[in-house]
Length: 192
Image 1 (tube, rainbow, N blue to C red):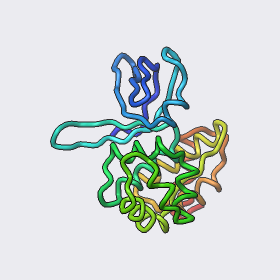
Image 2 (cartoon, rainbow, N blue to C red):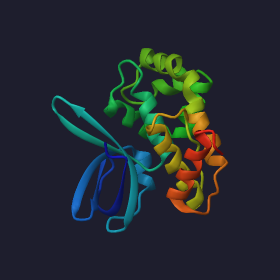
Image 3 (cartoon, helix red, strand yellow):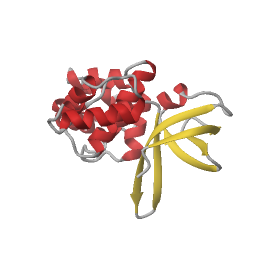
Image 4 (cartoon, one colour):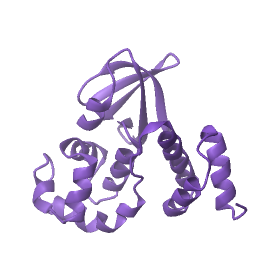
């Protein structure tokens, strides 16, 4: 599984980007929100990724923020929504608007997104309304990025998101990724 790519942006289109990581360029499908958030071609970029393996190929999807990736992962759990439609949904409506639409059961707003009909919009609301506690909110600055990365790593290790948030909040933010991860693991093991 490829968690994140960091490197030089070699190609940027509204539906996909290519990032050169130490001489190997990875292509990823992206939403319009991620496209707009990325720097110009030739500059350094970082995207969170999700790899989808299907019968017809291996696909990589890229996200500017961890929050957008987590919303994508929730969307693909909804019956009838695959990765390509999930990216369209995130491109048609920003993460915050998506949260609001689902939280307020605004089916009509969701149905305005290309590819999402009335029944799909209703299914999104029904299946995701109670799952939004698990989304990491965007934080700004390097400390927020480190904490988001640690939370993502801990969730991938199998810890529950609310526990991960508490552990990371209790960890000192001045030691970088490894120090925060070590401290959070110490807290999660009950020794902290």
